[in-house]
Image (tube, rainbow, N blue to C red; front, side, top):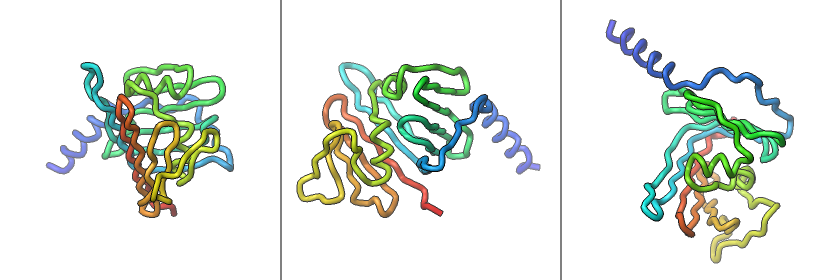
Length: 181
């Protein structure tokens, strides 16, 4: 009886914070990237504003031109779904649906600072983004600097990617990729 009540309570809570069903599914392409895992983003406080960030499970598919990112709680409830294409960037949350001009505008609205989503597709594959210059970090063959971020790939084989921006506001992005099947 206790288990049944606990299960019902968990399902009721999950229903309160889930994203509605997807109206137009993202159309995956054969060459699309498909990754999942956990991510954490922290943006430091600046000029009296509070620090922002959070962590979530994620499923990412697509490319910088068209794709979808789903964020979920540890129990698997969908918190948010972002979809983008050449014509729109859409964010669905349990409370609303919003459109943005581009992915930078979406991350700036959510975190107070733009995160380079287009470059992240390559960073998650363990390489610099080809659309911008990069420098290898001195004495570190596993990392590089790009777009003002230090990307540490020293534990990439374990599925861990760490990116830090030291200019204000400082930001840290940690990604733990699920093992590939």
